[in-house]
Image (cartoon, rainbow over all chains, first blue to last red):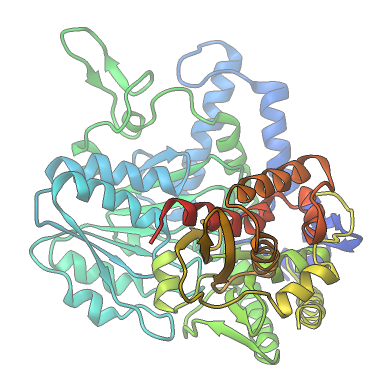
Length: 408
Length: 139
């Protein structure tokens, strides 16, 4: 028996899940937006401030050593969690957005030429589109969208067909935040590698749900964010091949990323510290370390199995609701569901569901091109995590029925 | 927000949403304006026909949420026969209401509860912004 089978005990570890919202028990179905934090994470952050607060990698006193040990410990935990080859491959960032910007500005921009292409799918989050557009605009390169299908799946052959001698990078989300689609990233990574094109995989929506093995994937860059991984906001990582990090110039200058500074010239620290200037979000990363410990103890395979079950229950429930249209019907999908309801706007549904205690996201989910593809301004998105329950799915269905009656 | 039960979806708002006034395209319009809600991607187009210094007619078009639709319905009603300067006054009354509670007159008072829904205030302001854009882009 896995620890996750005692779901009441698991839920009791997440204090937010006991919240009462507008007189109703909270049904938190906005996990793709940000995840709730277990006591272990909250205690680790609090414990840092109350016991170990000191700066990292410079103070030689006891508190500084403790803080450094906890902060660097989080890097080691993350390395094992994602199957990276070495701790030097883990650059700690503020999140996915910073990680992708780091690659755009430090890896790509220095050598980008007019006519070069950056290939990304049409289902990317804005954070995997806009940084590329910014460096493309500066250099005369172009961002090329790879097609998706009406099911909301990647057109794999279509994306591979767009890879050519001008393609300088392929960017692809592991799991779509708007559609829930799980992409066949290994196929794309291998196809790009065969053409010597580097790949960046956005793992923001994947890492919280199933085991990641970056070494086996063999992508050049894998990025993720901590706050969706049950850790504090302002934490994330760029996991990159060491050779790239050695060759890349620093992204931001400051303390901690240098070896020696003089006005005649400055030499830089080795990766990953070369890319981590200034005092980092120490408490946040200690929280991330605690989140990974927690996930390891429960087991990512057990988490994935439970979420697959919840996904299937939710999918069946959604199919039963008249007037509800699910956006995207990927055969490989996470427990993330975008939908629209006849005669009701996404924002109205989300505001009224909140009155019933149900938290969902409404809007474009930072994926304008995906929404444009489906011809929609906005959808409602319900995104589940392992700590959700079948009873919550039933409460969501009942709340949605009530909202529809109100807006009819 | 608080545990306070929302009155945002009042019968006034829902009635305007079900049967919005002045929804469609305005023939012989002298002004057109468009506003976009960055949070949800909603677009709203608002058109006037101005004679002298009076708005003779105002209509809106767009696929938007109940709050935006109701607000556009109320605004286009309120502007008929008013001077263009009235738009900015009405918008200011809405902003004051978001800060200080019911102040706006007529049906706009139905939006008083938006002080408890800051994320939705932009929805009610969207028609005002389209109207202000219309004043600036005469056709």
